[in-house]
Image: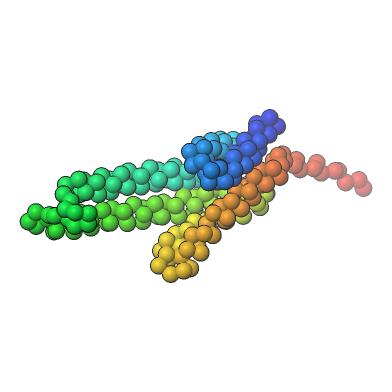
Length: 229
């Protein structure tokens, strides 16, 4: 049987972590480095809390889905950063190997134009590939997070967990749809809607942790009273 200290610790870690993630979004505007570190620290606290809660409710899928969600999201950003470094390297190499004449005209050797077009196509295709990979991982990560929150909502009886996960999923869908339809105005609106939806989802998660109550022990069946004639 889980003690009250274990439950209270899990609840406190989840509450503090959720608040830190929410604050990190605003800190990122002032200092991206401080905001990123605060976000990661808060996310770790939430994951530790979900691990404790998965033990308390005897449901490992709570932590498993949440952990996979975070790994896919962070791994996606690392992969995209690597691909973008490759893109930057190719672009830099193209610039360094192309001499200038005047201020605006490129002088290229024979067949140089063909090489330039091929290099530009490689840069553009790598960038698009990185973007598609990131968007796909964001969607999968958000769905796994929603699954974790839904299970926790059922086990704990606190519906705000599921609502928080649902808003995070809707925010991710809005972001992906925004990039897909960025050519038209609605795409920019969908992208802009991502941040407030994410903020609301983390605020709701903090409230859910605050309102979380200890699991009640199963009630014992009452003894059958003997019938008197």
